[in-house]
Image (tube, rainbow over all chains, first blue to last red; front, side, top):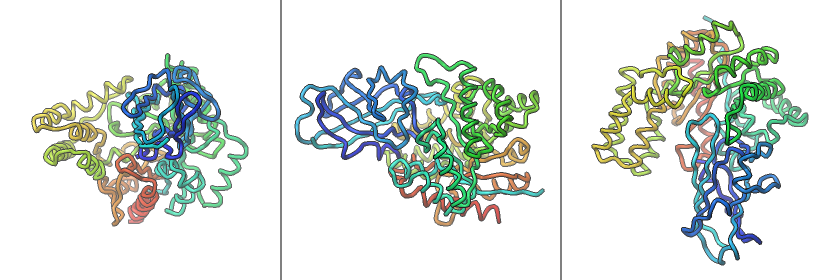
Length: 123
Length: 349
């Protein structure tokens, strides 16, 4: 299962805006960002609002709302992208639990693809 | 009748090894060649970084690999992203342009067949036929379970073939239509997720009954979701779900029961009946044991139908067991190897 290898164990960090981690899209081909419907981030049981989440792929950063129109930046199959989350002060030092659910809408699928990855990490 | 059945590997089979960085594109081609394949099937959107641009550098590398590993391009798998914008479906013109792009990529990389999905609208296929002809690339519609040949659904396309007289459109059967059992690994996964053995038994018995009685085939409908739901209900999904509910089934039981309707058994005679319209094949597989047997597809029986039909073309291994196991990044290589050997024995047997 691709979900098994979804999260980069070395990708966790605090940033100026909050915190960030790296993930692959657990779906079998590269996708334009426009078909990403949502990325739901939960850390230690706290769900972060959609508006606080950004995607950085191939050197460009988009909010989830902006990503809806992005058809010229492809998130390659197997490529780590960085997910940023706005949170004042970032995460406290120590261990945390992450759950991230990505919703993708490949055109040929009657239903959207919803995949979840989970990991424990240390800041 | 004379036949010439060749072995190919769809690099889709190696997706988890590629995803995790164990194999790059050249590594996938090398493994396919080592397993015995002479054909390479590619999902350009999966393994070509610059897609949809094919750079001269990539093209040169691609043909160098084909020569180095003794392989040739067999089929390129396309995905018509006709809902690339969140707020609308692409127009017919836009969709045909998308097909043109993919046909040109296939042509550039030496593919003679482009796989398209069942979700590609008829008018898009029809509108793409002159392009396919100009580039000498045939458009193959994947016959993926629960869709089937000799069905109301395939008759919809046969009507178009007869009406246009095209030689550039046909079918790519996927061996998921020749499952006479539910894949073993799917059952193992369900049990691991907490499915009750008695519910698993109910699902397996129902599948066996469908195989014996014959599946009710899917009809042609532009609304694929509706056609699929009608197909499921006509094949007893409602009754099975009721039985599982009565037996106190949990989420894993219902999930397994629902998933079981994704696999179908069709008479391999369907291949013989439609051979004039078949120029590539997805030899889908899920689990190949140490004795080189696909555990839910009677491979010899299916390959014998291809021989009897006089098939000239590739059987392309498409291993789809990755979703059914925790980590397939190593096992995918061995599974493909076993399946190629299984096919060699069936073709020579």
